[in-house]
Amino acid sequence: MKLLIIEDEPEMLENMRQTLERQHYIVETATDYSAALHKIGVYDYDCILLDITLPDGNGLELLKTLKASGKDEGVIIVSAKDSLDDKLAGLNLGADDYLPKPFHMSELHARVKAVLRRRHFDGNPHISIGNVSIFPETREVMVENQPLVLNRKEYDILMYLITNKKRLVTKTALAEHVWGDHIDQADSFDFIYSQIKNLRKKLEHATITIEAVYGVGYKLEVIS
Amino acid sequence: MKLLIIEDEPEMLENMRQTLERQHYIVETATDYSAALHKIGVYDYDCILLDITLPDGNGLELLKTLKASGKDEGVIIVSAKDSLDDKLAGLNLGADDYLPKPFHMSELHARVKAVLRRRHFDGNPHISIGNVSIFPETREVMVENQPLVLNRKEYDILMYLITNKKRLVTKTALAEHVWGDHIDQADSFDFIYSQIKNLRKKLEHATITIEAVYGVGYKLEVIS
DNA sequence: CTTACTATTGAAAACTATAATCATTTAGGA
DNA sequence: TCCTAAATGATTATAGTTTTCAATAGTAAG
Image (cartoon, rainbow over all chains, first blue to last red; front, side, top):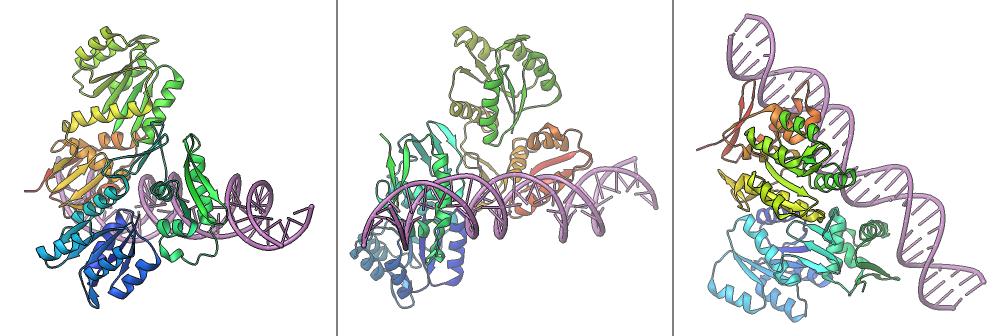
């Protein structure tokens, strides 16, 4: 799961990044309006943490632009001023949650988790597809009620494919979401091939399969 | 957490062992009545999985002996015949649960977890002591609502100390429960010292402390 | 059918995290 | 005081994960 933190105070930013990276999210950051706008245009995220007061613009504007462009990532507004007006404005513009500063880092994590869960699997504590069940809370995976041990990257890949099931996932999108954007202009996709291979092997007894789409990427299908 | 599986069918035994070891339990085994009796006499376990029909005796007898000796480990009876009589007899003798064969391995794990939880923290999904909270489901630990990252051994040690809080825990008992009995005649406790040191460091901001009891072991205390 | 590119695979290498060991210092109890 | 236990920092070993590499197989287009 990939998050974008838009926040200009360096210390706060570092704090948030650390907290969330420790929970295995891919975290990217932007420290001003224009950088944020650029990142949002180029990549896509599962959830965006948006500080309202930015040096070169207002976060609510950014949110408006974002929603207008038809993107539908989750958005949590982070704001120094706990004003009811801002809160309402934000939620009206389509934000998923509003978090007034100062807040506990554990609170941050809880909110992010809640937003991701609401978006991807409407509050359900586990996702089932074919004979595979996934428990995001514990990152456990079961096939036919037998536990299946996946390591971090394998789990992240499977999760990303599942949240996009039956849709085509380009290799670039996959790389971005699982590895982060430093992988951008990768000259080879060997690392993806390798992980996909291992994942497929582990999913031998599952009724889902990862299909290659020649020249583009992968698609997750349910075997019937 | 240390388990003892008493079971004479090799295949079943291997299955059970694998399932439980994969969940990071320390697993020991006995394949007949007398071996089981011996192990129970010498070591102590957090939960015992007891097959009723053994080549050289009846599991219920073993259970009776066990309870008579004042030991209080959790016991789950595993039985081929799903007879109501056996079940009642077992539960009357103080077993915690009854699992008729055949069963799913995931069921096994669930039952063990349930028994351990019931014994140590009667059904509570998390344990709190001082400003430390532990979530056994996810093996996560929080201090003052900040996540604290422990690795496997550190977590196991903390957990064992907490389930015996304010009681003296000998180094031998600790070694047995966290490492298993191959450590028995260890000539040095360096590995314990080392882990304790790291654990203490991580618990710096916690209001619990691990006190050494000279020549014997450790005791967990709450700072007030 | 041939060619150029893409995907799959197994194995090796690099990297990371964890755990155990060792050498040294500090402290406890008789 | 002396002997042993415990604590500590640094080092080494081990295990697990991820990436790279080289060889092979498959696909689409000319």
